[in-house]
Length: 427
Image (cartoon, rainbow, N blue to C red; front, top):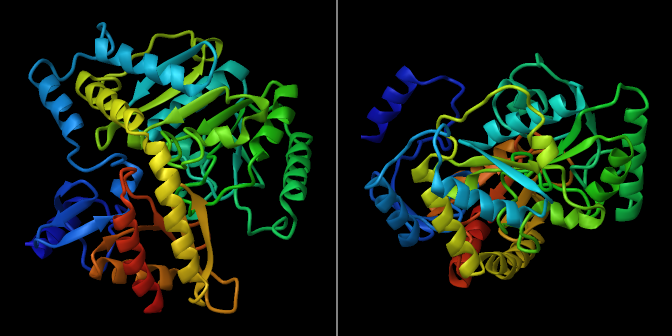
């Protein structure tokens, strides 16, 4: 049955629509932190639909909210007042940390970042954008134009002039040998140098922890230092929280809060986990920035009632059960467990990340050379052992990405770590 479906997939869908595994997997249902495939095999899910199943599969509170809303009305568009959309916008605005915030809902992180770029370039009357090397911001034409990761950038054509700065990867590049404060100082000097060679940019867009790039990040305080330089010139800061938001990093509710010395970002984008699988994205911005557009706009599917009902129920569950705290506690245990394993596996260059957003970078033993074949092999071995993980990285996709639902238990973390240990040792 799976082979038949794979043939049909290839017959009607694009060649560039990537599939994991030598024998691709059809997931049919899930519960808690587990999913089942069409063959009846059960897996512990450490990737959550690319960080999207944030709380749990088939979470009763969310499925009930969806079912009840579906019995009333699914959709009406933003041309009509929408109570669930207003209620969720109120919660998100309050949680964002941005003063006098306005919220616009989209259907994805790509669309959220696209909207943020529209706002910033309109507000600043500039199409120059600063972005980070090794970054990823989505698959739309403008989002690809600010993506600093060759593996996810299919064209160099763009409506934007993008300039890339250092800082998103702490342990690679020309500043890797410096300590944290020296690293930040060098990156700030690089930023100032870039600004001296271009017309005033609209914004810097940055992921506090780079997602597709392999869960890399700069030192805490890097973007606070950047923001001091940017604010002097009126340049906006867009924090792409599509993967880092809602407490996943454990230490903070938003990734930008690790860089909070200079205040919140001007624009914040979110998506993925808030809907627990429903299609929700969005933008939060100061009122003067959000309201800078001088033409009408709507969002046909952004903010639709059924997704908003799911988002409200999911957010309430996350806050009431302190899933940020769980991510910090269980994620910390998992990280240390993996570091202990990594110390005995020559292929592992680094275990990094925070909370339940962890990366394992693989290289050829004794070198700094990325080893994508090893990453693929571990992905396959982990699946054979009953564990689903992801992969990424700007250096030839050589990093394993570990991002379970935030309700992960200590026992499940130990189980997943044991499977990963076996898969890594198989190298």
